[in-house]
Image 1: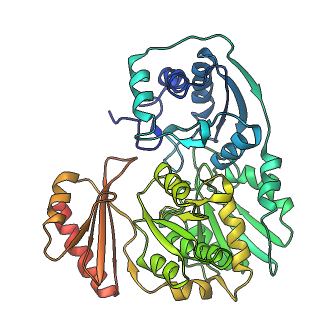
Image 2: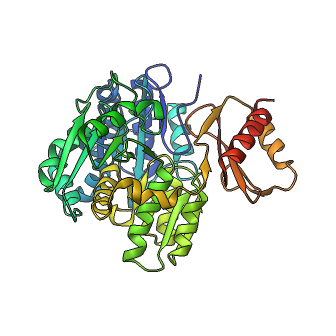
Image 3: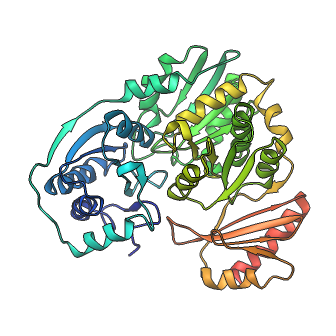
Length: 440
């Protein structure tokens, strides 16, 4: 059975890998490891079918350990991040499995000082205590409720600065984002939202709420064309990721969106550091350098990128998966914060496609998954002649006109390949070579 304790959150099939009994133990263990007895701690959830049960059990474990839990109800993961700051709690947790299919449940934990809890920052200790079943009772635990969605919507709306009106199609994927737009859309003058699949439904009846998979985007692409919209945006289940399609219905990869937002920040903060994950196109680093900024490559995963953002005092960081992190959003990620800034950017250009065109210099494979032994694959890549090897996250091999990265997934039992080349022909050829190497 797969282990639900991952490098930067807890995520597993409900109830086989993650059930109420384990969630209760995780809640109590979280209180022990983070020293939460007698302190206030925010807990929210998304719209997953398992969410109410896992949340109730997790909260019960916290309360048993003497924690004052502030229950903020059903909302996005970034809204729960906002709530931690708005309510002044000692961190918090979101009951979510993010973009995973409907059968999954999960927990994302943030500690005091808004430190993400993952590998090396407390996750191993929480797992060890939860597995041992050692609960620690303490007096004073209780639950109160709070509602922050209107405050969060107002916070986001203050970032809106359009140069012209926009029509934007938004595919909520039956995730939590439809609920968020109920509060936000009325506060966005100049933006006409065309909603798709806004009803929260943890069974995901139309398509999985994972905008990184192109098979989930055809409905959005078609609707953008049908509406003559300026662009389209798709969100994941818990609302912390956002992916775009342009006015022609063409998918804009999230690393190029990182470049767009990087430009936005470098125009406002000369010489700033912009961070990006190592799967991103090399055009991102080139653009940052050309604009006088400092490009910093990071490992994949929110806990690692948040740490980099803080250490580098960077205003912004982006991931190929559609996570965008902002210094002015407490160093955390928010799909809606990115959406607002991208609306600002795209209201100042002729079209989304014209803004992206200069960044489409190279040919990227996108992320491809393989069931393979990572150690064997890494050894083969290290042995490739002429490779410049780095090991920031998995193995990255650079060859001048092409590069690839192979890493073990932090959330699934697979090896992930990303490859980019200067020409389409070279990308196709090298992709075939790498597939043969990994599968051989």
